[in-house]
Length: 222
Image (cartoon, rainbow, N blue to C red):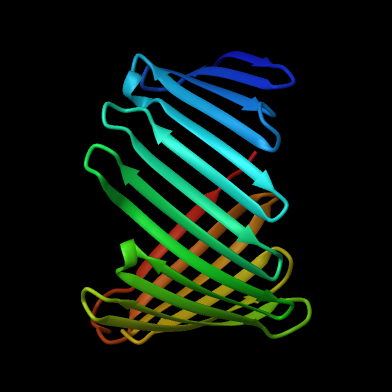
């Protein structure tokens, strides 16, 4: 339930009552500095829920820093830089009280009119994933996908191949199979504008005695 809303040129203030009887307040400051946005949010009386976020936007770069205002604050930062054809990105989390990183990830992507390739180093350097998407027609209605990932701590490699096909502008079909025998398929249909119905399934081809997994989801957006 919305309790209060105020908007000026540089400040948006919104307070609302959420189901757990807390009052959630979000303050958004724009253009305090050029190309920046500052967002402060907190709940009353849960004072350990405070969060401060600073965003910087540029034509070829973005940078975001988030500080969780707990008794033991955690700092998260993300950055991207690039052009429409090539981009670099990184994400890191740091816990000052323990003096160590809670997470760090880095990646690069290259995009061409008929394809896209990316490499991501994640799990604090414990995993690496490389993927490639190639569109099979000029309208990008169908695509072939290949992915290889490796987890260094377990020496586990996973190879995945798949494809996607847009039946029309409302319906999309996807399928994938990996070297562990996992076969998955998905059908997604836009029932009404911005609202998606998704039917999915997964089968372990190496254990056909097991029942396949089935899923049904409906996402409704106003």
